[in-house]
Length: 253
Image (cartoon, rainbow, N blue to C red; front, side, top):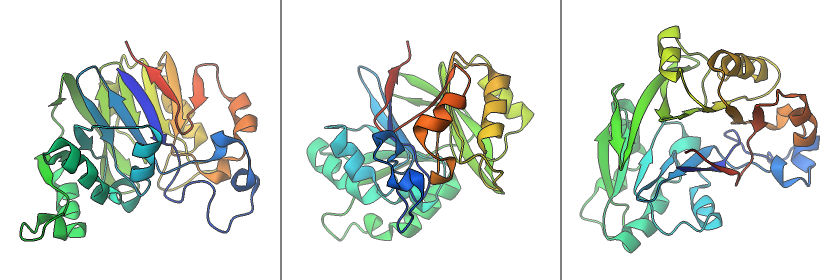
């Protein structure tokens, strides 16, 4: 299983429009961040988690020629706004794109992309919707366990896929849900900035969760420009923690 970070930034990305901070002016490519998303590939199946506003460019950058499904964490625009661009895959693959999300998220997708469900209009995205609850689901040859999280007061989902777990936009996780992470060897978790934030884990909170789960390798994502320069904060982290950056990939055996 190969994991690729399509984007590792917040809803504004880095650089932020109009900002003149060190991170936004950095010429280090690791400080350039699109909206958060990952791609997961096996020999027989490829899917992404979330399709934000940068989805089209992310697919072009990674030279993705086919895509089987999109799995959603929640309905905020930085996680769903690129959905219209699945039309290219509809055309190439001659079928609807399989979308997986919990009922509230599917309802929001139907509302925000109402035209996609108007069969009288040609050329709209073709979507096949599948409901996710808190039970294990199958995508291709992978079993996926949803993890209930809170994004401030909004219930959202992270996902456990074998030895891998993906958590983004979380600010809280119940102890019962942490048990679903036991044995995780590769943990991806959001770390917005060093200071406390009401709707996302900060760096200290992310490192505390990593310490509790004790994975072989952890990756930080959903990083804001307020974290500073990659070359500086990356040196402050434990040996098993890497700040992810756009285009980074790794394999899970």
